[in-house]
Image (cartoon, rainbow, N blue to C red):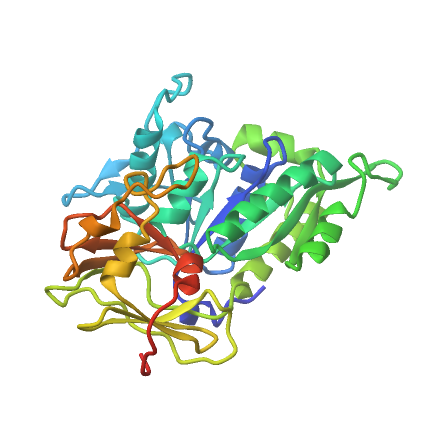
Length: 389
């Protein structure tokens, strides 16, 4: 497995997700992280399952407490060449994390932004199962390069995995592919393969949804022992079929996600001061309609260019009236609560910032700054003719 060109691509944040628990998502994360590190990549893992962290135990560093740099940054744990941060490293083994949503978001921000990662090629985010607050927080706060969906061949697991995949698509996180875990058990005595949870479901769903099938990982009893002893399977049984599958998946992920590139994110553009404006991507004429490639602002308003070459010029007052935040729209009925007559005709944009991969945040001269404008909604907004952005 060679990664000679990887560092030209730059750091990537890849979410490892699943629709339901018990599919071996953390086992997949730990093993592909170690496989990448073996091949020379600088790899970090954020154990984003705040309530049920397991990555440190799988890597044998559950009892390690992180240190602090003189500058106040957290020093991550390290095992098998992989840097790790997890709630399991901040609390006692049997102490539950009793946290409400805002505190969970705060910890996630800290795990990514306040850890002394150094130079990384890949940062894997081991998500909890489901499509809840943690997934949405990460999608909104960070420019994820893509997501991997882990499932078993069971019909119920595959159906729920489909929901997780659709959730990531809705927030413009590219789906790098599907991993089918526990795909079959080979009897160590006779060599007979038993498909305990059926077979081929992951590959069929990947084909149906038009995403990559990254590989299938067979059941291996050694995985249980490895999880208990803190020795990843790729180290404990490097020649096993399962270890080979993990390395294959790691190799596939390195080259995945080479899709149309948009504006440089994250960014926080103070329009009035002229600081923080994002760099534009190369002009294109045949890219995805909802990939934003250029962003500018003038006396008329916001200028946008999309990857399919479509361009827009949107007035600040029109954008302010179109805001769909809870202050401006009824969250249940969608009815407008903002009186358009109350919006000044000379209202201006004062700040523009990125919201994950899928939206812009806009602040206006009237002080309003709580609206999230998805790329989809911006694209659908009617504007004036615009010269090249």
